[in-house]
Length: 157
Image (cartoon, rainbow, N blue to C red; front, side, top):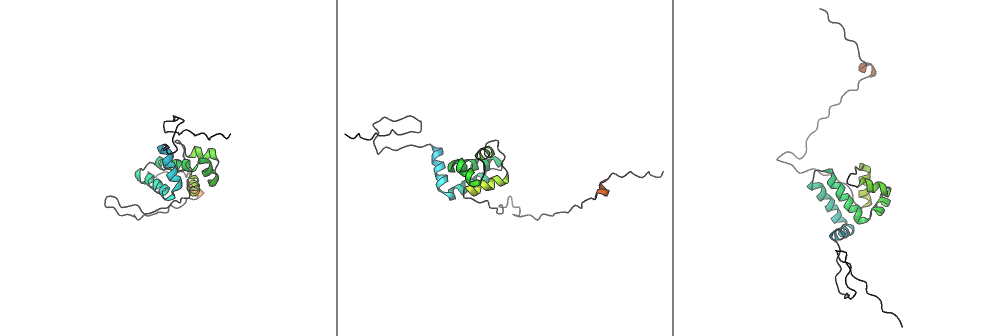
């Protein structure tokens, strides 16, 4: 006599298990973080907007680091590290709260996530022009002879 399949209990956001008599039409709950991670993983346009918003809302460089960490977690740190050709432990360290990733690491992670870094002119602030002309002055190099300390000549009294 074949046994009837067991009904698996539904997991709720509080981590408690429901009674064994769960109806097949019951709704399963997932955490907010899991729902956001799923959307960021499934929609590259949303991931790009998420990163743009992190850059636009704060002048703090840690904001981009937090957003990159969230995106990497959504895609799986191990998979992102493999696609970026970075050691998994190094990626965890670079994206940690105390991390300070190199620019090449950020570019590699963005590439692994299917994103690219772009630059555009900043909007004008307080009526200022949107772009400024920069004057670059070339400082001549001193030769070794000019850098040597030369004794001062005595002044005539």
